[in-house]
Image 1: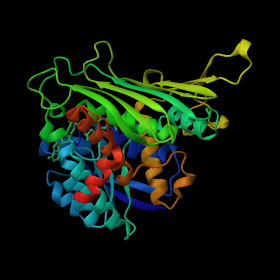
Image 2 (image 1 turned 60 degrees about the horizontal axis):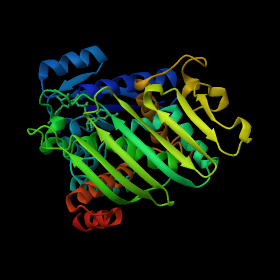
Image 3 (image 1 turned 60 degrees about the vertical axis):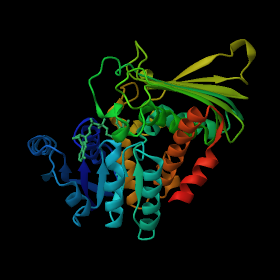
Image 4 (image 1 turned 180 degrees about the vertical axis):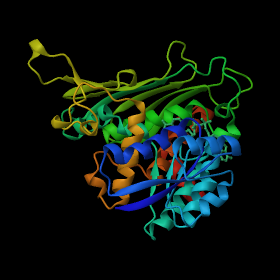
Length: 382
Ligand SMILES: NC(=O)c1ccc[n+]([C@@H]2O[C@H](COP(=O)([O-])OP(=O)(O)OC[C@H]3O[C@@H](n4cnc5c(N)ncnc54)[C@H](O)[C@@H]3O)[C@@H](O)[C@H]2O)c1
């Protein structure tokens, strides 16, 4: 069994989620590689030392540049605000180190393109990149993808995706409101998740933003507090998206409905163990919505068989453990198509970032924008 030394940057929300995931991955799954909690970096020395002691990291540092270039480290895991992603990722890739980066890939499309170019150069040396679009590894979302791929829905006609949260109301000044750090607001922070989820489940890409609206409610915020947009998918479906941090009454309510010619799927994260399925080909007298409890490993439900017997729910943190285990499988040589769900790399996350940029551009222009125009412009610039 090979060891993989992890160097993680950031110790708060995602730092905790990832430290837990690397710790749990080999306890519940059997990847061919064992992660070693080698070094964690944070800005505050005492707090980083305390974090390292609590989670079992061998070393703690405030020197991010040194961590990124440390030859002892095999994978750099980036859990910082978005403006730090590019420098850390490119430094690690140039040093020949695998990178797992939080989403959105970067604060700006230009940085995301530079990161992807660095990833392409490093790939020639066998270096891999991964992006933590962690909701792909909610078992019900992965099952939704499998059902679409099996043809149960037929051609996809209509998609509706929402990400509603309320934490922005009365919140203190945090980096997520600052364009210089975050790049964008609700757009990159939470719309990114539902853009990825819709493309992941349908297997189709967003090609055009037909119209969009971005609003900032609090004058001191330099990013969007809420965003709504209409999109076209390359299979011909129409889609609507909403993302806000000002939806009074919702903490983290996201989900989607996908309607195809033969059926429909409905998922909501506050019932993450369930997937609703409507079979439009069923006998008319009994046609309706079926609620699938996605908890049965023997039935082929992804990942759940590694945890508890059916009916004993798993939660948010498990999705990160699934991703950590899948990263270790991928690095251990497991082919991508043998993974339950494809693993997003920098190139795929760049495509999501281009969709987000198209939304922003459509808002500024008050006109429809083709994602290809944005993609071509960032290739030309890089
Ligand atoms: N996959 C998901 O579901 C998910 C959820 C939340 C956040 N995220 C993403 O994860 C990233 C981090 O978000 P978070 O919620 O953990 O933020 P956070 O504010 O909770 O933590 C950020 C951490 O980064 C550190 N940091 C900030 N600037 C730094 C710098 N210059 N050098 C070194 N460390 C620095 C902070 O000290 C802190 O430890 C963001 O890109 C965010 O979009 C993803």
